[in-house]
Length: 162
Image (cartoon, rainbow, N blue to C red; front, side, top):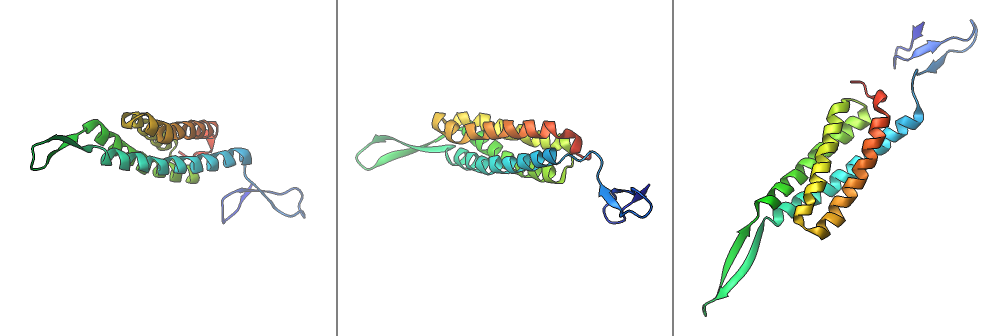
């Protein structure tokens, strides 16, 4: 059996004088397309996750006007640590989503790409802390996109190298 010196695929000869054909064993192009689609969907979900991070950190301090004493109003800032945690997980979701996307395109480290998808799921679920409109606009699309990409990655698990 001969191997190609450029890409390492097996070379098969039909007859002695026939041209050499390159074939990759076990390569299914539909699964390859599914993995690329999953990577693209994860990238879209990671970009949406940036908005969860920004809104979560931005809404962690809310200004409220309590009373008026004749000289001016007293401004109070209410601190919401749960919204800050949501923002931090939103930014982590972006970072791990981009890493997961890169790993899906290169077909390496299946387990780390699944961990990235899980952190994106967590960021989407925590977007409910920001309120129902934020969950519907930001969290629900991430949940749907992430579920589809998880199914695609799981189907094409055998294409990952390690």
